Amino acid sequence: MIAESKFGIIENQSKVEVAEGIWHFDDDDWLLIALLQDPICCAELLFEDPRNRDYGGCYHVMDYQYPLFRHVTNYEGLPCARTVGKTESMKADAVSHVFRRQGEDMLITAPELIHLLPLCDAIEQRLRDTRLTYEFLDMRNQKTGFTHRPFQADFIDGTKIVGRIPKLTGTGVKGQHVPDLRIEEGQDYPEKGWIEVHETVMKDHVDNDGNPDFTYLFYGVHSGARDGRFYRLSTSGEFRITQITAIMRPGWGPDEKSRAAAIYGGTQAPDYRRNILGEAGGASSQYFVTARLMACLDQDRESAYNTVEYKRQMLLSEELDAMLPGDYATREARDEAMKELLRSVLDLPDIKTPIWGGMDIGLVNDPTVLMLFTMGTDAKKKSRLKLIRMIHLWRFRERMIRQVLALMGWHFGKRIGGFGIDVTGMGLPIWQALEADENVPQHLIDVTRGYVFNAKVPIGVDPTLVTKDTSGRMRDHLGNMVEEEVDPFTRKTRYIVKMSMIEASTRYLREFVDSTLLQLPFEPQIVSDMQGETEQRVRAMAGVPRKPPGAFHILDAMRAFAMVKKAEDVDAEVAQTQQTPVLARAVDVHHGAGLLPVAGM
Image 1 (cartoon, rainbow, N blue to C red):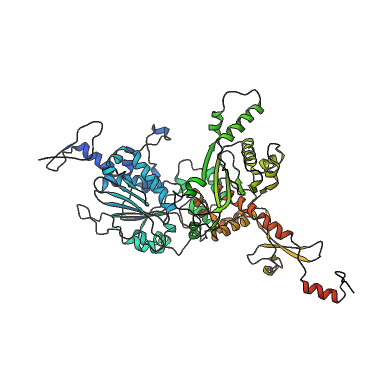
Image 2: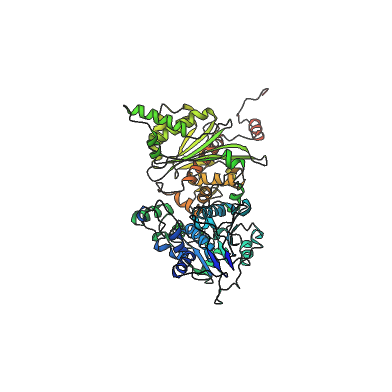
């Protein structure tokens, strides 16, 4: 009896015939199967990489990435450095799973949707772009092969790749029974999630020879916490631990090392050891609590806020230069043409509510990041401070940056309540040129403030929190420096608490997060910047005389915004003179202090 396969027709070839259910394979067929079942060979055989010009657009796995792609034990942990290829390895792992398993599932789980969906989106794109896996998708009965609640890929033979989040109680992964488990961002995975997901792995699953045939893998970057399950599993010896460091990447050298050391505060700093070396490093604390940060995040990617109100834009100077038509007789004519081009491509919202903005200026390899916020209401009618625009300007020249700010100033007019610019380093000359630029509206100049991130700024005047340390210096309850001033009008003493700009602005931003006043879009880059910041790094950067290159550009723009948003309140508080209580004034008058003339006396 002859049975026909149902894998479809490729290149107009007839369907492969199977005699008595047995494939007639030769040596080449067995070699192909072996290649497809190995993540490294599968990726290099099927994937494409147009950026890889050295290999003619073929996909290439770097030698140092082999331990990430090919796993040799059932239990394995991968607490690695950042940007070493973990996502790429998981994409190859998922694609090879389609050929390695038949009718069996792979479970991919992460703490929150903001962690899970970007990874699943990347896997889905790779499955769609690879013709062989695309042909294997179950698209019968008008199905697409994918489900997005939150994620599932279905194949014709019953094999599935499933994405789930644990939720706080771990119930999100209950009911799953898989031979292959992948835990992403394990450093943030909830404790109850670890307990529930452990039981999803089919540990009695064996291969044809009776050997254990399951994989239990977790990925992540050390956060510095020593009491979490991720740290314990990474150091207990129960899992085979694979660490890939950033110094293994091609191109790593003295320059890259010095920049990383400047960012993290030295090669022995905890953040350097975690993000570059993949080690646990010293204990540190995330500045923004993950649960509160997620409460500010709109994780419904189809919401009106994510799809209509918020927009992200990336502009490259090379592309804009190429769009300019022809040559120009004068520089002024070219500048005018560039301004009109920027006016046409810059996506600024037409809203009537007040606008606050922040900008982190970068030149050459660092982007300039412009972020705009406004007050509005969310789906529950709660008043929120919403991020509505995030614009990355890559390799923009100084004049082009000023042109963008001028266009923004004329577009919003007096609706701009405040605009903060990080003027540390290269931002200072741009800030000075902005003040003298006749094309920039005066109102924008009036409400724009430039901040040096290690400069001391006033943050409060509460005298009840002032104490003296062992050296006799005045400090507030957080240990910040306190200055004593005498009011020139009342001759009363007042206290002004001062803190470095980076510490003060980050604290203001944390207040916005903790109160859930801030509303953020489903944007992994924003969350990555905020989750990567630590209290130790903020304090270390407060004493650095210059801003290190390659810092958290998005977070720095948000810091500038937070500083200018709070500036009016702080300035009013600092300028406020201490009032003498009415009773005290009456007593002074009664005893002849003569503060004020009293009628009839």
